[in-house]
Length: 413
Image (cartoon, rainbow, N blue to C red):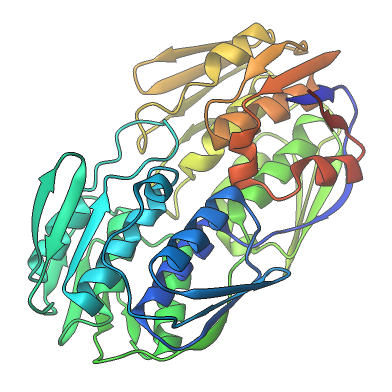
């Protein structure tokens, strides 16, 4: 349980950690080669630990050195993923592409992860089928096979991050060029492209597509994972909701454009440097409307924390969720804290109140947990948040970083 005594403006500087959602596919990319892949700036999170354990279970030799992880060849790549690891984290399903590309077969349980709505792997399988794979789904397990993957053009009905990454991973060892039309363009996907290019499979972005030139084999490389834009955005919102001033050092401002534009709209003072962002707010925020969209639109992962911020703004705010259908699990907890928030279909309506109040609440997923932490920081009295394990999946040393900014926060029994 996390215990927060709110009502204290946060001030100071925190260092951005590496992006969880870039580190996970990077670990899966190491499965494409027997040569060493060194990943720097890797956040030590539960989800990342699960990805590394999966790589080890599939035959990689793994060595941690601080925030650097070295993944070496080990023996022959295994073709069956342990269900316990895959069910812990959705990104584990990305191991299927490398299995097919290197071994021509793979068995992968359907993935787990946060309960934020249906996230089917249909686009993954349809895309891999276009490359020559065939599938049989039995008992919750995908049995995949492919005599040889052949590069082709794949059109995605939706710019799915996971499907785009899956196809880039599989296409890296396919014969010829694989072009993905309507791909996801999130910074984490682009970062995977940089890694695959460094391993020997060039990735080229064009206006409506991304293409990868498959190679007979890939080499090792050293790659630095980009900073986590969602973590950075959460701490910037923490500064704003407490009417303080927080700087995130090492952040990529160009990855935060949608959030920073909304913060300016609410009256926050936003200052940007090449590798740092500062947000300050001296009084009550103004209401704002937003809609989550694939990048470069407003990120779905920042919708819950943003609603906590808008819960104390002046006026009515609306937020339409277009990415995940069940991303409103945190709303009931905000209401218990005094927020005037209601859900209407795919939209959250928020009538800002002057003050929130401490309560006993529970985090149901990573970003719901972040939303409740922000609300607790701004609230009067004490808030106790259960389900803190979810926060450990997405935020490195959350309690320590918040304390460094002046928050009264601790982990309690």
